[in-house]
Image (tube, rainbow, N blue to C red; front, side, top):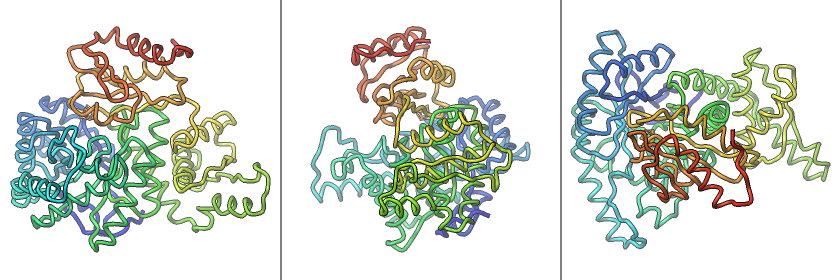
Amino acid sequence: MIYAAATHPVRVGNLVIGGNHPVVIQSMTNTDTLDTTATVAQCQRLFDAGCQMVRITAPGLKEARNLEDIKNQLQQKGYTGPLVADIHFLPEAALIAASIVEKIRINPGNYCDRNRGKTEFSQAEQAAERERIAERLSPLVEVCRQHGTAIRVGVNQGSLSERLVSLYGNTPRAMVESALEFIGIFEKLRFDQLVISMKSSRVQLMDQATRMLWDRMRQNGKTYPLHIGVTEAGDGEDARIISAIGIGSLLTDGIGHTIRVSLTEAPENEVPVAQSIVKAAEYLQQMPETERDALAIRYDARRDAGKAQEEKTSMARNAGIAGKDKELARILTAVRWGRLMLRGQKEGFRIEGDLFSEDEKKQLIDDIFHAAGLRSSKTRFIACPSCGRTKYDIQSVLAKVKARFPDYPDLTLAVMGCIVNGPGEMADADYGYIGCGNGQVNLYRKGELVKSHIPEDKALDELEALIRSDFPCRRPTVQ
Ligand code: SF4
């Protein structure tokens, strides 16, 4: 069984997260929450695939209330796994959902004051804002206490409060301070059924912020379970590799108590990937440390000896658990070498054996370097996994965007499901494509809205025109 460092235990329905309990795999529906039949069916598919906990978006009061029907129908069909409500901006929706489901996810950024444009905050102003946050959270804590509902404090790099960004920049430190601030407020309200997450679409930032938070919680003497995931990972192999590196690196080091792989695909596709990442991390945990970290050790020794570049490589021998399972072998290779790259290892490595062809080996190594942010040979795409807020076919749009703009190694293109959370969560993207409903699309450049309500059939051409006007010397590959 995979080892996860012990924490304060948090009960979520018939599961316990943290304590000494095994890592819990979760996912999220992308159906309309008001469509009870579709949402129940998707939950069933997720539970059948091995998902242990399912999150459902509750952006408004109607959706929050409908969680009751969804839960009742699932229970009638024998599905008793815990449900989690994803709360966006409405504290009232949180109050309703907290009385129905076993856990709710809130974003600290949505409980802070809106301080648009303000860049300086006195100590007194900061303390006063913390008081106001406590007042906003207090009714929610009462409902959660009454119903035994847990809360995830879901910090997202794209939606930090202006106050924390002004103090620490948009950095892992600001994410950590946001989480600790909310932990402190909840503890003052005598509530400790908390799970914490630190999400970013940049795997390095997510890794850094999570490790920093883990250390700070240990210094403070109380550790809460951590939910681990790389947000807006997109789809296909790139998304699997980036998730393997981000989630697997932390799990290998015993950090992380529940995980979600976010894919812009059918949610049930996330479950086997998550299971493979847990398997890979478990395997690496059992490997002697000297062997697991061999690349770094050999590299250091040879650098000191001033040996040639080609000697600064090591080999990936991952047949141990993967056997002929190429998907598991890919994930294991990504976790193993990606983890070393996140720790500062920048040298190359070689994959041995005949499981992969030479082209596949080269591609996998390129993908791992790309995901770890060390080398870029292609456009970086980010895309949200979509949820009940998404009003267009994001999966096919992402495929079209990837096909049309493959060769911009220095650019990040985002495809997001909704205009409510999308702009904030794709904040570090160079260009963003967001469906805004009614067959229309908004386009963004560096987080600023530049074109709105474009008919969907013209949106890709408009995006291309925008990129061309910024980079007149380069031609996107049009397919
Ligand atoms: S950005 Fe995507 S996942 Fe996030 S709320 Fe909007 S549609 Fe849902």
